[in-house]
Length: 258
Image (cartoon, rainbow, N blue to C red; front, side, top):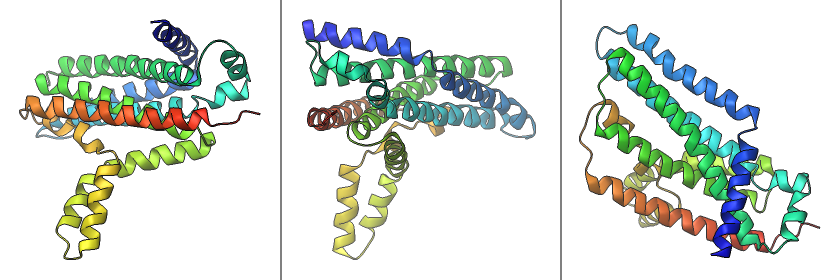
């Protein structure tokens, strides 16, 4: 119980620090602006204007959500080390694992709050323009929340042992490749070379399958979403996030701050 209280206290403090960052508000502003711009782009089309509006809106929410997750995730440890507050925190009866988990929970809560604001903006634009809303939209935001938590975990992993610039590059690269792991697996499965089939299958298992969290097409096109598609993706995301955080804690425990 004491460990959970320490983690929660660090998480609350992290949220307070994060919401003071003006860059987050700039990214949030442009995200809401892009969601609203979907109305203008959709108006240029005589057919399927509502689908175009929602495609742009959902795409903007996802893109800016990931951008914010990477931005705040890579500063997880660097800011504390740069300001030397990490020495003060770790000098108290707080383990490095508690410190890292507290920061992760706080940053995840921050990105979820910002995503909720973008979701409200998308909902308002859809209602104002008469664009249809369905249960698939809810599942889109649920799985997006899971994806963003995983991205924060990946950023935490790289921040635990490298510089912010490299952490941002590694996290962005992992996210980009994670969108393509299914395609790589399918391409490799069709290959006649066993080595390629094995390599693409291993990559699909090792790298995150982020495409499993993307329901933007189903939401924009009013397609049905199976319950298994949601809960299996959530279980996968929770499991992968847990593994990444365990690796991050192991690396952070071995980091020398002197």
